[in-house]
Image 1 (cartoon, rainbow, N blue to C red):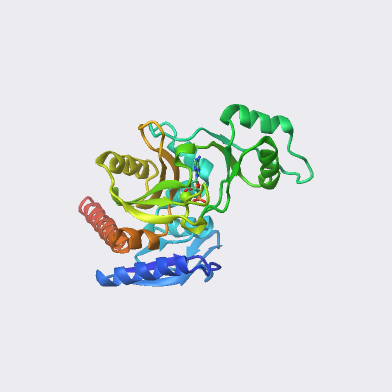
Image 2 (image 1 turned 60 degrees about the vertical axis):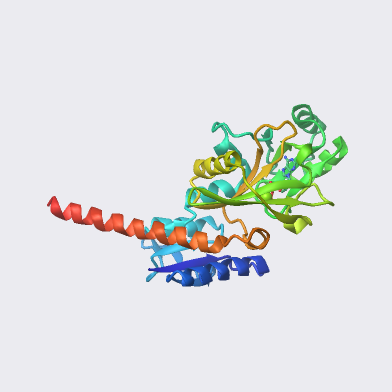
Length: 309
Ligand SMILES: Nc1ncnc2c1ncn2[C@@H]1O[C@H](COP(=O)(O)OP(=O)(O)O)[C@@H](O)[C@H]1O
Ligand SMILES: [Mg+2]
């Protein structure tokens, strides 16, 4: 069995490098060969009216990028991809993820999709800001739908603040969200692999309402209650994720935690350091088991087809 670990071509961040090299290391440790390749080799194309992918010799792909075109081509070519396309695409857009998770009984902060503006010259209307404030109050969270590491997440504390933020984000997909004040600067990151919550990390920042490690958040191991573990497992299952990091916000009332965000490509370096859990090993093992099962299933159905001829 041989795997391809595909990483973004442009990213030079150390965390990306650690993610792919740790995974490759753990695949090797369980006897699975895996190559790390940058996503700029142009491995996918449409030629002669057909999708063509140059990934010969690989039995599976761990897709550490989010580019949806190569992702789709890879999956259409029939190779097992982790996470699967539908899951990566749902998580990539925070509003899509929110809509997907609705209706499953999870507690989520009240959220309104932002209206996209196609003309940068067109000013945000005061009435639009007032409508958001009427629905969600102040302060209110504004998120760009495509963003990570806290970068596209802002807190508007006043009407003027909100107008200014709306101006900044109006031409990008964005959403407005109720601010869960009790959880300000704190959240719980849970990693789920193959349907099992493997552990939790409390992230807290003394200087920012965002608890991302990149915003000053510090991670410490957090023991998951069976209820929170199974809650996180149900969230991962709802999005069909083989691997994810779920951000949960603490409520003030002792009820269920709020689902803040689900990351299909969650970094695990800080989590491994805080918890001592070998996330890369668990993920590599899960992928290897799934891939073995996939090819076993294919062989069996080929045999049964032959038997029925
Ligand atoms: N509705 C909210 N109420 C309180 N804090 C929030 C809320 N949404 C996000 N945060 C804080 O901001 C951080 C980043 O938001 P998140 O949606 O996870 O985006 P990112 O993809 O950038 O991590 C969260 O980890 C949390 O600490
Ligand atoms: Mg997050």
